[in-house]
Each structure stands twice: as C-alpha cells, then as structure tokens.
Image 1 (cartoon, helix red, strand yellow):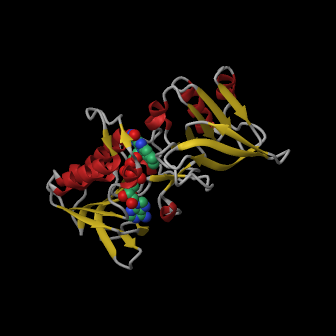
Image 2 (spheres, rainbow, N blue to C red):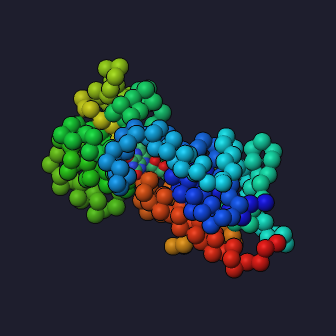
Image 3 (cartoon, rainbow, N blue to C red):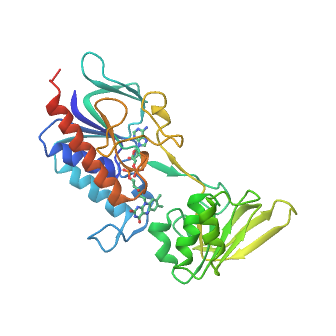
Length: 309
Ligand code: FAD
C-alpha cells in the first residue's frame, strides 16, 4: 500500500506528490490525464515568478518535476469509488478498470471543468477568443470588445472585472433577469461600458476561421436573432467539480465541492483534498499548488500520529 495516494494529476496533485515524496514516504499519483486543465490553457501570465508560459509547457514541467522523485505515476486511471479505512487503516480507491489501490492517506485533487454552452463555434474558437477564466485571460482582451455569458454571481463579477480592462462588455443572460446578488447588479448597472441583455439565448459563436468575430443570440420573447460584433466571449455558466464519484462518502457542498478545513482535511479521516475540486474560493494554479502542498503536509502529519497498520 501507499502512504500517500494522490488522485488527480493537475497542479494540486503534482504539488501534493512532490511534497509527500520529499518526506521519503511511498507516494503514488493516479490520474485520468496528467496535467489537468493546464493542458487546455494557452497563455499563463499569472504563475508568479514565471512571466509567461503556455499550458502544455507547464504540464510537461509538472510531470518532469514529479518524476525527479520516487513517485508511482499511474496515468489514464479514472477513480470511481472511495472506501474509507476500516480496521486495516487503509483507504481504498477503486478504479474504472476494476483495479483498486490502497493507501494510509489519500489526497483528492480531481479538479473541475467549466460548463460549456454547447453551441456551434464554442469548441472551434476555444482559446481563440472563447475563454472561461476572467482572472486568467481578461488582460488578453485589453481594449477589445467582449461578451460575458451568464448573469449569476460569477458572470456579473466577470463583467465588472472585465469592464475595467476591455473597451466594451455585453452581458448576456438566458433568464429574464440577472440572478447575481443585488449589490453586484447595482455595480454592473452603474458601468457605462457594459450592456446587459436578458432573456437571450446564445446560439452561436462566430469567427473568421482563426479567431472569434461575433456572437449570435436569440431574443427568447420575440424569437428574432441578433448578432454582436466582438473579439472575445467569456462563458460563465458554472464550474463543475469532478466529485460525482465521491457523493455520499465525502462531505460535499451544495455545489459538489469537497468541504475542507484550512489544513485540507475532508470529512473522512486520512482523506485530504486540494485545488479546484474543493471549497477553496478562487480557482487558480498558484492556489491549487499551495493547497496541494498543504494537503500533503497534513497527510504526513496524520501518518506520524497514526500507528502503522
Ligand atoms: P485540474 O487541473 O482540473 O486537474 C485535475 C486532475 O484530476 C486531472 O489530472 C484530471 O485528469 C484528474 N481527474 C479528474 N477526475 C478524476 C477521476 N475520477 N479519477 C482520476 N483522475 C481524475 N489558472 C491560472 O492560475 N492561470 C491561468 O492563466 C489559467 N488559465 C486557464 C485557462 C483555461 C482554459 C482553464 C480551463 C483554466 C485556467 N486556469 C488558469 C485555472 C487552472 O487551470 C486551475 O485552477 C488548475 O488547473 C486547478 O488545478 P487542480 O489540480 O485543482 O485541477
């Protein structure tokens, strides 16, 4: 069995694996896709001390760093069930391929995925004008025109944030009214370069083959279509944590995020969590890595206080 088994190989999982392995304990990482969301990212300009890098480059660097240590990397492995420790003191992780792994402690770092619109053009122009993270990609649209799709808290926050950087923001909400907190709605309505469109169903992201040049939405009341010319589209209709497989076993928030304390401890003894899959307020690489380090140190702390099975 492992001393620390990390489930998920994104920034949080890579940091957890390195911190655990540096304690000289048996460490493994099982992940569906080593690198995680970073693999889908182009420019990264807010990873402190690295002025600029690209997602795929960072994913390679993550793996190379983990491979410097004695870590058992199990790629292309999807976890489907967690069984809390019984008398043997071992947590079991069952995999989709039928195998199972046992470990004295587990760090869950399965990340999250952005909910997509599912309209033509969205996939084609991903990273070519279609973006999901205003903190990450906002500055790439400096002085340009963008739309934010989604009028909940994250969409309205994004519109307020972007309005300070870009030339113009069109905020598009499917419902007949915005759903964000009143204070955010007041703020967004006060901004002169934000136009709010409600009762609008986004039907297409258009482009010139290389990058985004517009957005088409249907007025749900009248039924007619409108086209907005712009350079960027931020989709803010929800971030879904990859935690469906933990339901009923590990305590989750109403949004499905793994509930952790400030040491990364979950509701299950010996099970810790880090990164976008958790209740951590901001979903960013530096934050996920810091949490991964924290969770691994907490796992080590747990190990030295628990008699070996
Ligand atoms: P993830 O990166 O999501 O990794 C999760 C890991 O778990 C993956 O290895 C996945 O395969 C694995 N996994 C999932 N489910 C299972 C399962 N059941 N069994 C086994 N393995 C599983 N952040 C920034 O700081 N700067 C940026 O510029 C930036 N740009 C971004 C651009 C885009 C397009 C996107 C999508 C995100 C961006 N982010 C950026 C956010 C950043 O990528 C995330 O905050 C970060 O990757 C979270 O790390 P994580 O390790 O928690 O999860």
